[in-house]
Length: 270
View 1 (spheres, rainbow, N blue to C red):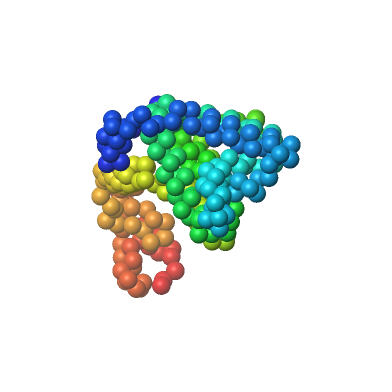
View 2: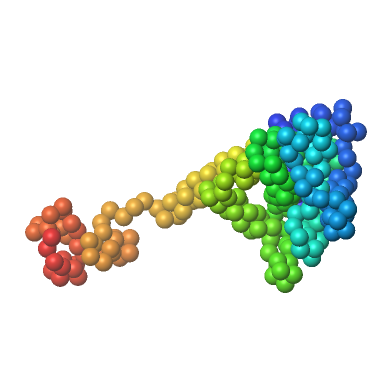
């Protein structure tokens, strides 16, 4: 079952949905996949060049305005089998988000990611903007709402998406550390819609996590009881371990160290 929490963004989207819900695009994930599949087939037939679809600010200013949209339809790779699996998963997760949020909210989520990618890609190396990181933001959103959904990794190993999402964040962090600025900007752009939609939820979870840890610590402390008053400096025995044990302070040791009866005469003075 999907996780739900009332946030400011949730309330804003609810109000906007009542007025502008008709702007939601149904089956948006399928439309993007169909566009990429078409571009792949046409490029394989050498009817088009994928370079003509890339986002290039200079070319756009020269009149090739279609590049503002067509970069979304550049296929995510060259291996058709892996692309087909990626397209299937993108449609599966996108449709799940669309069903959970509604057409309008899912459209807004992708629109924010698109605008961020477009804005960042406008100022970096031509061709650096792609839909790959946008698809990544869909996966991360899916992992928040359906964390226990299982995927057959390599078609044989069942893995929950929350674990794959953790690996994705590690990978994004690695890219931010070692990659050139174009890639860094694309990573940042792809996460803006995610944090816009889930930022408050993340903060809420962190607060609840701290409260839970504090509560559990108090429970453990109440079960354990107060700290021991006497403790042997050699074996660590306390009066709570043996209520009949006597403890003595060694006058020849510095710091007023205490010892149990066994180690009072069997320790090295320090």
